[in-house]
Length: 342
Picture: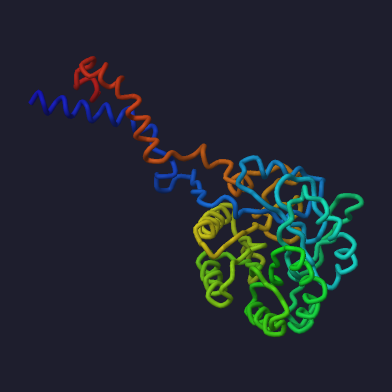
């Protein structure tokens, strides 16, 4: 009976001192759900703010390693800049800017993104501010920009391919996630033949179902057999604009999709669409900053800023428990079991 009583007392003391250190993320239904960062170098930013917002607030954790601006214009940052040849509307701007950008080694340029036809961002770089966003444009949809795969291949050979000879890795044009997007990209690669170097596939995806995005990524991987860069993705319902993701839906969607991409070897890089003050028609709950340009809770989630605050690994739990073990020993006989149970 004495042994049983002491064993029970020991168990109660262990529970008393160790349970407070069990992490909230291990409790079902807890609102503190952190994503395990397994490959932090993949995360990037689609940056449309020029220098009006401090990008350093997103690089403070070291988990964001690159950014792009839908153009060849960089902003003030220590992380890698990835310029973009947006398309036929930006030829003059690209030609006048790209070599100047490459000449500045501080921008750490190693890659170039090809044509991007999903959104048109108009940036007044002389004033360092975003002016406006035009409506959706997709190269594969008639009635919009309607660039054929053959036209895309010709533009690539003229404006993008020469940078392969300068040592840059080249990312494919990024079509939309509409059913015709994949077909357009296949047509582009076919039209290129052996004259286009495509080192990785750039792509966008908007929707509300994480499983559908994962299936889409796996299909692109199986089809193109090249590393994937998801340069835009968010929890956005284009099928029904009145039925958008709630803030909690966005958190869950980001956790599920970002965790998957961190662990998928074929996903090389990704950039959430939301690092801007004005979302310009996209669901506001996807924003990574507030209207004043300050990083918000979703932004901190994206860069892993809250991760260490909300979770302890099982090893850490045991370590803290054993650190408190001398206290358990000291109080072993301090209180009778009846007082513990009261």
